[in-house]
Length: 266
Ligand SMILES: [Mg+2]
Image (cartoon, rainbow, N blue to C red; front, side, top):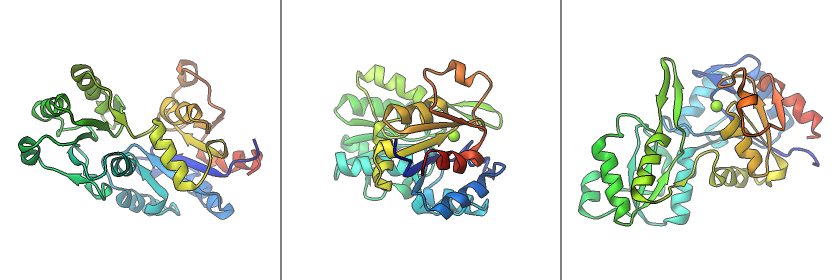
């Protein structure tokens, strides 16, 4: 390996928890900015637009802007523009991500009932995932609509414990309709390819740092990037033993990333 020339950084559990910066994270980001390594913040979040995420991070002291952030919705929009140009898309999502779906034609329920949409797009799970909405999606897919999902996360962690996420509903929909969704968020190849294109880097030049060993770290390694796991956020004792593979690097926290990049010959 002749050094790392680009860095992909997960947000929640790496830089922040509940949008509060983790110890040393702001300082580490300042160091990465000082050496000028191309970087992208990458997240499957479907509850906020990249503008809103950038505001929250800037408010927490991180020297980043919206142009540094790639979310599952922004990558979904790029996928839809490229693979389904001009398609009429029915979005089922509980987060407000319409601001990140520029260039995508969204139809409402009445339009979709009048003429089958070309694509059914599943975003973040929540109260929008009603029986009526999911049954409508099932019927449209049976009638030929393509199925695209922003991610297949089974659950996410909230202040009150784990909450059921899109992947749990997607599995049933795929089985019932006899189809497989195109998934655009981490750890899909679509997502990592979009991030690498954004940074102008090849996989072997890029390092992904995250707190989710499967989706962030092993997912990135599967697509040819170097993976680094941080022991913050989702990390628990036993995470490494329970995983299907081993991270290339394990860091106590994001604060240790600048030193790792130096060692790797950035
Ligand atoms: Mg995370």
